[in-house]
Image 1 (spheres, rainbow, N blue to C red):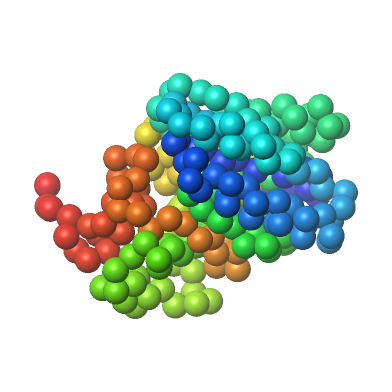
Image 2: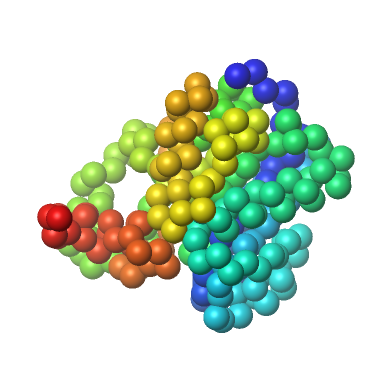
Length: 242
């Protein structure tokens, strides 16, 4: 796929009852936006938080952040929330005069903090021909015990991204996203399902740890599995065999 040079970035953040962490997440995105602006001032960036079935003040806290669009949904499915966020961000970019064929979609999670180069890395990969960026994540060691820290560290070598798919650090060109059908309304593994369809569609997928994202190390997540389940059970081989 040959895509035009990027003129817009849609940052999408699904959130469910993340009042404790949403402000940290958005502050980190603001820094990444500023760094991208410094090297590519022509690229417009829209950040959308999707507060999905929240029972706390996540949406209110997100609205206090500058340059953030907040929508509220009740689907109780992270895939549905991500898809709604993409659609909303694309609408806002269109209003700014950015054609949908020149947009990159950057996905993270509300319990995560992105590094300053997070958006810059993705735009550079897109300029080099990537249609999809599969990025690495690192759990917050403050949330883990010593055994889990040792197990995680043993499995991860800096500079050698493992290619695992994480919604907290996933980017793709809007053309590729639409061609693959977008996020399904799933409450788990919506990111893995989409990346597989992207691969099947012929998209060029780049694995990278250059913009590694810090994410919560909690053992009970907002979905019935996902990364929290991995940290709680799979990391130490404790998940029961079905």
